[in-house]
Image (cartoon, rainbow, N blue to C red):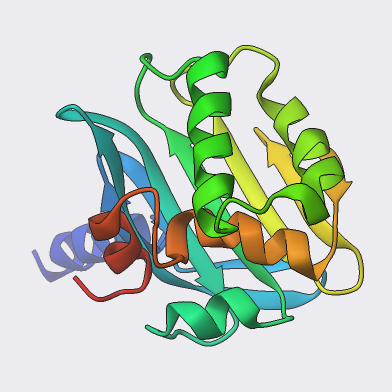
Length: 190
């Protein structure tokens, strides 16, 4: 009897240990506690859902070296950081994502996109091909090279420098974010 109990306990322990550790599960999306980029480990600062007209569109996550609730500091920091966007709705199309992202750039730059217009144009190309439910975009800033843009783990380009990074991260973290409660979630405040 004790041997059988020990075998069951060992099996259960092994099963629990083989489940990957996730910091958060939002709308069926598992967001890992950490991600690594360019030899730097980033921590999940916070995550939430972008909704519009009562529809959940994507889960956004913010990764930083040290967690912080200070949006201005995160935007201005010239350090490794990342934002992940997990598409959870078939309602997101290439055109809609392009339009919403351009509105975000307008808001995050106070309607002054001219200094980084070339970088914005280059970035928007990532949304030209079809966007489907289940797609994952990773926007990974590396101080030495710019924002590395990934779609479904495939690098699609490296864009801009620090000024572009500030505008890009400002889409979600500026004083006029894409969605205020998503900003609060990404900052770990809710």
